[in-house]
Length: 331
Image 1: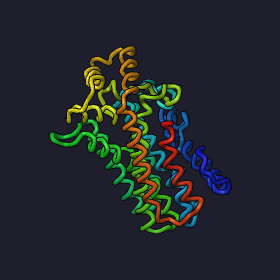
Image 2 (image 1 turned 90 degrees about the vertical axis):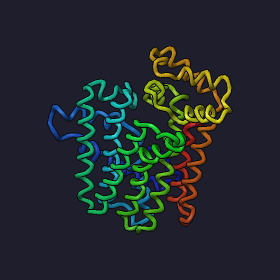
Image 3 (image 1 turned 120 degrees about the vertical axis):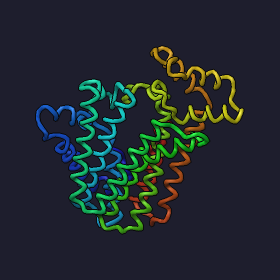
């Protein structure tokens, strides 16, 4: 579990997170003996549970924990798990959380349908929380789909690829983290104004988190991340360091090393594991990685600025630490 920096706060929240975990395990099974293994696959592989923890944490700014808050926490994690099944199929990722991706075990069709099943389970749970929760969940689901579509289709002619990527990250990752933060406030009676503030915080945290992942994909090994380094590169997905290389090429400031990297980043050049490892190592050493790291830190700083109006409290301290922790993984 992530440390919250306050022993009393942790003692209050962690038992609720344990209950969320138990309800999550129950939610991913129960279809039938044939379907349960793939549907429980990723939940059983573990995970940081950042989204449900954020829901529980922001509920402390209202009246605290209740069944609605815990149901919302389960729903956001179910939704997150569903997106992972789909993402791994689209990215052809062999690993997820250190285990074989579901499509590697059961095939693409089963993985996609399993993701759909988990979306349905999350929607059914949200339906018990009222019409406003359903609307927010539907809007979040729409943004998750739009983010994936925009990533797949790429920027339009004349659109800044860096800004396009940030928009994709806000939709694909930021939207669900924003909803996680919003739900905690909404279902603890904290009020609409605070829920909106926390949603803005959560979206910026999500972008910072994914920018950090863009860097970690190059700087950590599969044993650390549970994913093969350079998977996005091999699939032709331009993460922020690559986009910064392309931006420099556009404005004429790209050095010879960067130009060589762009030439080698052609998908057909990364078919062999040896070539992929070599490109990852060389890209890792280029200064655009430090630039991407600084950008992640800036988004985390902006997220913390969103909660500046909150009065001093252990919860505010934990929210600030939460934002920084996602970027501190780069150290």
